[in-house]
Image (tube, rainbow, N blue to C red):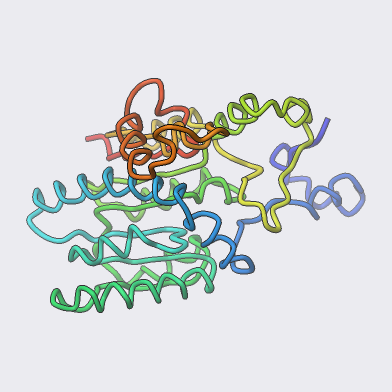
Length: 298
């Protein structure tokens, strides 16, 4: 049975030099994932087709509707933080709507692509003035010191497709607690491990499902080996006193259709149906990714 590094008593670290098992585990300990080396591959694979269009369509609807309502309630533009932003499409669009954005990622190459997109958007929306975006290339754990001089907290914190690539994903909730305003919201989008099983059941990949040691090759693969189930995320929200405002599924049927026919051949129709079923029970829980928007409990 494989040993989980988290099960090791690190108070006994002084004995690790005499224990080859602990030494071996420490060498393969998980670390936060950066896509710096495969930024081009990431851009093409994740956002180069209909999959990316569906993902963005659901997130736009969920986040833009909520941010507009919150901005009207507060009577001002929002202060928004995007943690592990990657290409930052949603964040950049929020900036074009007049909000103040802080955009972060561990990968310099990913943020260079995001900056190029922001420059293009800024030119398109130049009548609204310069986009108010601050960029930080660093692990999210270093953001606290970078933000130390800023006295105002954030009205919205977005964390999309980051949980599954963190060595200790639960700890990012403490960071949210520190940086979120009392009336703020967090937008969490994460890979749904149940979708991996379901898709492989449909495809007949039973050998893969029977292989308990299966790991994707993460040198290029964008299938996470350490996804976080929705039940775990919900438990974090409960412990940190958040209330779920909405939950959506991203790609609730598209990825499960090996044979494309009828409406599947019409991208606009696919997106329309994905949007329709993305918030309906039980379909939303089949999404390849899940999106949860939550606020602090009062």
